[in-house]
Length: 96
Image 1 (cartoon, rainbow, N blue to C red):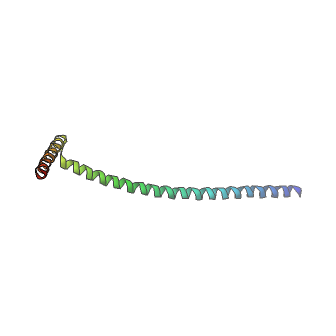
Image 2: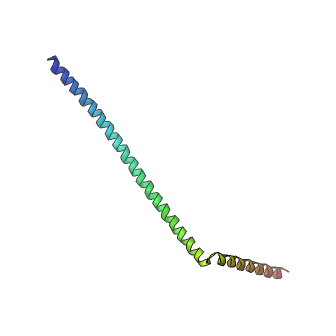
Image 3: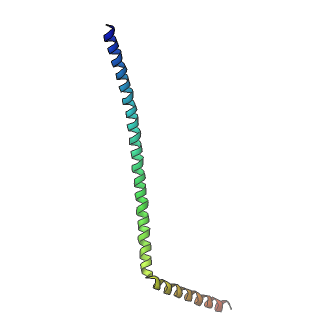
């Protein structure tokens, strides 16, 4: 009889250990699912930010294309400086 009781006790202990491991695995699985959801939200947020930056980049690219190449940028700067000098001259005449 003692042998059967030992076997039963041993089985109970093993079953108890398996149930504890199962519970730990369930908790770990739940934690991993929560982390996965958080990661998905972060990825979506980063995608949104990326799309915003892409739109800004395209707008900047378009603005630069309107100015033209480096030569045209230099010419544009020179024209702006000339306009500023003319405006300063006009303000000087109005004030004086």
